Image (cartoon, rainbow, N blue to C red; front, side, top):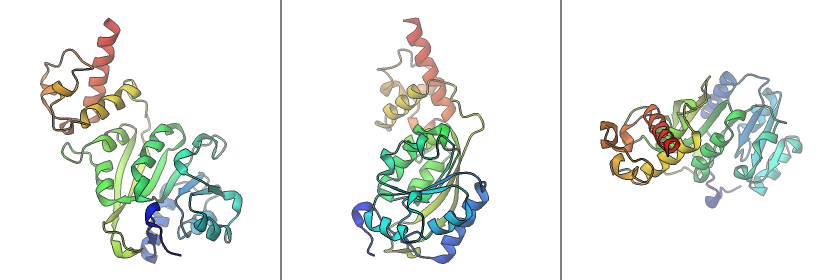
Amino acid sequence: MKAKKHLGQHFLTNEATIDNIVALIKEKCPKDMPILEVGPGQGVLTFRLDKHFTHFKASEFDRDMIRILSKQMDEEKIIKGDFLKLDLKNIFDGQPFALVGNFPYNISSQIIFKMLENLDYIPIMIGMFQKEVAERICSNKKGKQNGILSLNAQAYYETNKMFDIPPEAFSPPPKVNSSIIYLNRLEDYTLKCDAKLYSKVIKLVFQQRRKKLRNTLKPLLEDTSDELFHMRPEQLSVEDFVNIANRIEEQNKKK
């Protein structure tokens, strides 16, 4: 079965890497926790996870892959269609679940945002990303890697890059290195500001990331005299953006 470029498919073939990923998922996820795998492909992780976990399902878009999976597992456990369009709260009848997988590179960032839209149902995520994307998600330092992905993910999750995977572990080999990351939802994941406003502010300032905040935030905030607003967005933390969102909300209440 040939990988399909338009679906971002690269089949994991290295047995040691497969063993390491399965072992990590088993270590971080309780056996009775429901597991949803995205992009199972030919099932190199799928069949092992299905045997180990009490409640397991796999979401696959490619009909050819679905035929392969159907030969070795219960069809009721295969969700046929686009993961990004699924109603996640109904996957396991409202139960929280772990989201895992060798994620298709072409939708990996969208998977993160889908997860964030369903925070209450996804306490754990273990997934494969392009190394560059993984490092952006898990970057907890102020700097160039800081951005929309990291600041949204780290507002709600502890983010960890676990290990890297070279191109030769796949068929066909991608042109980039890959990484496995582990996201564990914070014990208190209620943002200390309006969550929609927080995301709006981050999106706005990173659309013009080279500009200082006093310029990009003019449409939302009247008083940008503090030293904080003389910085560029990549220099700020989650807490800084929470503070900005709260200032905007306070200003709007006074109007």
